[in-house]
Length: 262
Image 1 (tube, rainbow, N blue to C red):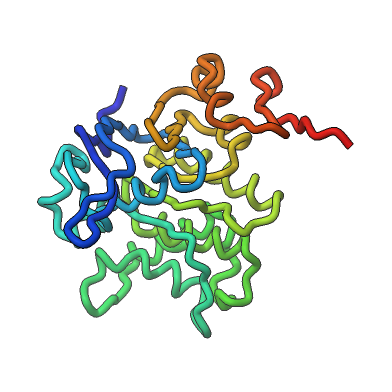
Image 2 (image 1 turned 180 degrees about the vertical axis):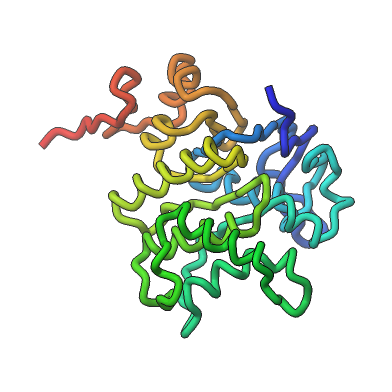
């Protein structure tokens, strides 16, 4: 097995508020392997976004360590971190007049210096990134003119142009229709396998995650479980966390069953 590009040791995540620590998850020992799609799933409020922000360095750990390619995250400058990891957030892209090409070219900022001059290598990477998400031909379209699915593809192209071994995404299918939710997750699985990048995303698309992910990080308000989708189902962990009076997860069908009677 390849060496992990992210590993955590005894990691505690949460917030510091008025000299008080609010612990969300603790004692996390996690590995992110290149070439895998990892889906982070769990109920609202269990800490999925907090974990992603901690791994990216946007939030400091309360305890423990995060290692990026065997280097302690604390020792990495912002510039060095930007060459190791890209992060696609859920913020909507409504930037007046900016073209798709200009947006994707921002991914080259860690390499172009403060002037941002693009060399032939940079333009090749930008063009290839657009092709990988099937947005070639959209270069001169304004970002605001894109559909929600196309905007998400443009954001992923920007992350690809950043040319990092790790891509993190926080709910990349939020606000998308069913067709685009499926297509975006299929795209991310394909990119992980073809480019050998490690792609870690949070999602509420449980059925799609179980179908497409190489590994699942399953969080609830008490603990984290890591494993192959089938193992988490066979162990009853998916069914334990995702259940209610009017619905249940069917382990044979790998989908939710509605129990509501008319």
